[in-house]
Structure formats: structure tokens, C-alpha cells
Image (cartoon, rainbow, N blue to C red; front, side, top):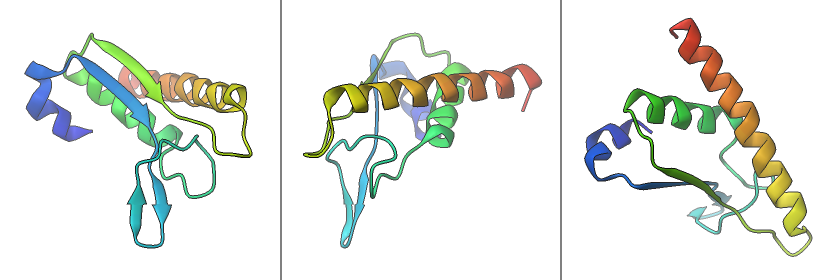
Length: 99
């Protein structure tokens, strides 16, 4: 997330999502959080939120996730919301404590 400090003046929208670890690297298929191979979670989203706060970002933030064949859209959306809420509280706690 620290690279966002370098482009703060042109940021207008942030997408939060996951990449998927595959044998030959990473796949940007927008897997849901906690699905097999997903590499992002609460800690990474909390760090992103702290960075956005630090650089004064006030634009739009959205999730970019999609279900895999065995998952429902509702399952993926609910998981993403849970990650965001938990990451928000974690980031807020860190910001308020000065960490």
C-alpha cells in the first residue's frame, strides 16, 4: 500500500480484492477472501486502510471479488464485508493508538 503515497494526487477509486497463488505465480481472478490460494486477508486490508487514512484519501472504495464455481455470490459478498469491517476496526485501533 505504501506505493499509493506516490500516486495520491491521481487516486480517485480504490478496488480491494485478492490475488490467487497458483503454481507459476499469481492469478488476478478476484477470488473471494479465504478461498484456496487467496493471498490477501484482514491484515492486508487493514494496512491498506491505514495507508489511505495517512495520505488523506477520501474517494471511493469498492471490493472486486467473484465466486468460484462452488460458491454463491452471497457467500463471497458476506465474507468481503466481514473482512472490511474487521480490517476497519483493526486499522482504527492502530490509528487511534498511534501505531
